[in-house]
Image (cartoon, rainbow, N blue to C red; front, top):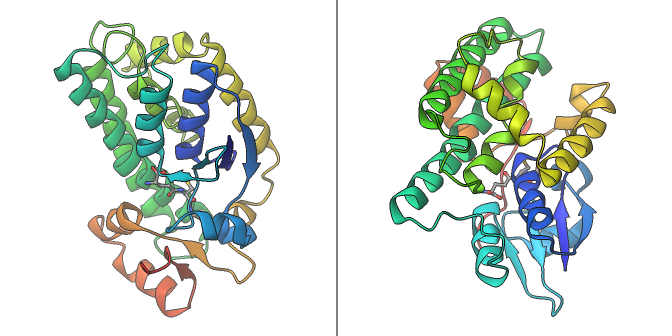
Length: 256
Ligand SMILES: N[C@@H](CCC(=O)N[C@@H](CS)C(=O)NCC(=O)O)C(=O)O
């Protein structure tokens, strides 16, 4: 199997952790359509996003949640879905919180870093920091006194671990989050998570210019669904409008 992946993408990282945790062999292919405009990813994925899993017979599956569900069915052991139905729904809720909200908070934060000359630059970073802290507090409550979010280790843990370290990058005070701090240390002991951490840290250490990580050859940035909702919800609609009118936004291709 092949996996179209990108070292700093939380969605691609989640799927790589699942593959590694289950011991499934695959060939990783680094792609990011907005940055490299390579047609092989574009022709495999309707939304031109990573991750995409390409099976040995050429069929492909896009979207981290859908790929994880496929992997769980085809490679059931070790399981990454809880057996209990309610815990499984909690797992999906936590994954969704990461995919929709945590991801958008990180995107908003880095947009503020990238557009440092914009009048809203400080305010958007502050709003992201506030919401990141609120998300970490929510996860602290979800964790409770468990070792892992849903009892046994699951996709919920693999989703959160690709986002939670952002709190440290944003210099968020974590003294009121003792369970999350202990959980992060616990997760780093899992070999598939440690391998992911190493790959992501190596990729971020090579990022000397945040623009290179965001802007494609024509200066456009990939936007979609919740990444658009977040700055509008926080009142940064003028910043979004300026990006739009300056032709700096690109969206997933229209359905065909
Ligand atoms: N719902 C998708 C979201 C995937 C996604 O947004 N991937 C981003 C990377 S973090 C991407 O490929 N963006 C396209 C681009 O930047 O060209 C999933 O869960 O896999």
